[in-house]
Amino acid sequence: MPFLGPADMLSAEPLPGWSARFFHAENMTFSHYEIAEGSPALHEHHHPEEEVWNVIDGQVVIAVRGEERTLGPGDVAIIPPDTPHSARPLTACRVVIADHPRRESLPGLGKT
Image 1: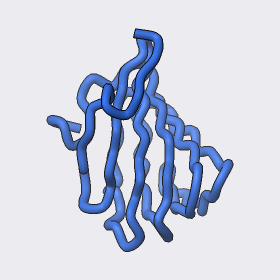
Image 2: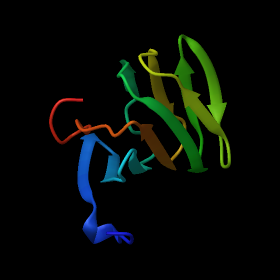
Image 3: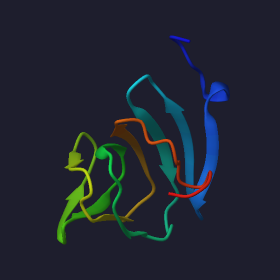
């Protein structure tokens, strides 16, 4: 299916205040997050997929291998495969995350 709307996507709340919609392309997985102000941080973790965070609104601190950076609208974090990373929202924010290859186990919808 070449076109999707929000109703066509999987929905989950992997952490309190982290509302997500997910969909798979042939080789990638996309996650649209709306993160409420005051939401908890995403713990340090890693997975075999490369991951790219694109901040649309708000501010979030991303740590990659222990190096922290505050990201705002238009900023991007590129996380190599199997690299420890975490995220801490500073404000309400919206982010789009792309994983390559497809991330079959989605946060909040089974094991992460």
